Length: 294
Image (cartoon, rainbow, N blue to C red; front, side):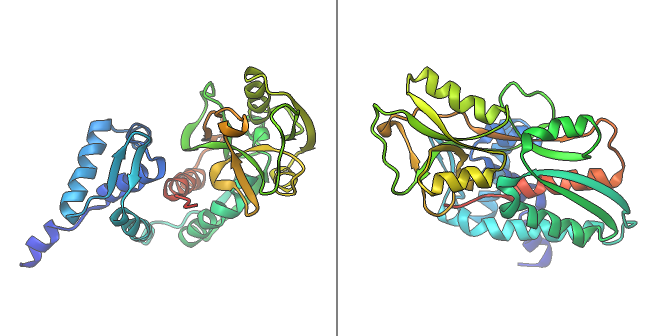
């Protein structure tokens, strides 16, 4: 095989990006929305990549697109390839300068923020970055007041601002040793401020006629997690943010299904410039490549 023929058998970055996006969402429709393409176009790209690699990358199941063993092997390699291409693309560009202020939910602070900042610092070392990692329900107001330039925050299905960058299952979490009979009020760990996250917990239990009491309140997700892991209370968490010592409660324990956890990316009305755009792209790519395995 000559060099031209060999190059035709190599996957291009567009195919790999589609693969990573489908792997992240586990759903063709949501992946297509993220990529700004039709579902059929993304499906064609996945089939083309499978043909190029002569390997089946996904199993099409009722619950979505599930990675095969070959897909699992490709995942880290595809992430590295796209990261390397991004570095090459910025190698000869004029260096960015300035300042950008970002907000990231604290439940994702240790899992993904480090990777986003590491990539951004390597590509744009002259940009000053200020990070607020905390209670994300405050971030929309901070954006409107121009106290943040770009932020990621949890939103319900009615939230129109921003773009959806990550979605996953929300679960009822409890300590491994926690027990509570169905006829007793469920002790809850909640955020102590009005937010969608708190409201959905109470509304879901009200609709299910499941009695509850508020046993613990905290501004921080770490406080809520401590109450859950310590066996004091039950709380709602995004599945990938569960900590060691926690377990998931379901219908067999009397807990109804929860709506998915959805994260959106939004910018301040007056935010602009290349530094803000570059940070928004870094956050978007970071969550696109974030594929937790439990």
